[in-house]
Image 1 (spheres, rainbow, N blue to C red):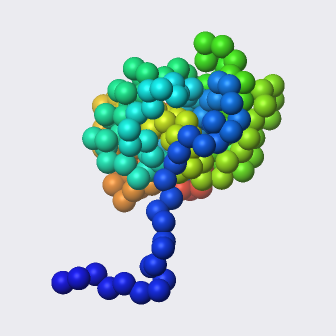
Image 2: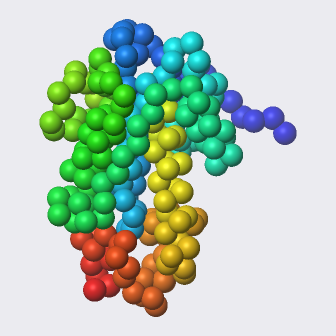
Length: 211
């Protein structure tokens, strides 16, 4: 059976990232992205990635659009060919500040962890982290528009996922090895039955309501 096609589908292009923003800016451009703003448990993780223009891994895209196997394969290529820095903001910092500020702290730390300051930053989102002393451009939906940000999204997600799998071994029952701390049905049931762990974000409403 053939798929139906109508006017609304003609000439529709699927958005894919490219390297045009980096080339237009010139110099050493770092893509910056974070993961983990929505979960009820665990840190927020950020990555800064400076790609080698001559060795860009094939298939870079928003980490959310990729299979786990593809993300892992790209992670290996990115680590092998690019300059990468990964950083975190802890659950305590999320509680002391707020999730947006904690995300920005993780981003700042990731940028500061690069071997040398980049010439420019491409940051996913609408708001730049306060305190940047490097020229930067916010890019809405950047992980689907810029290869460098897409690479950062993949690195940050792989790293945070591994942290949550490790924490799941220490705190079994919450399903963190599969839900990565998000409020899945299994996670919410475990909160009711097992209680709140030190890795839960107590200021988040679903957790706060359990206390």
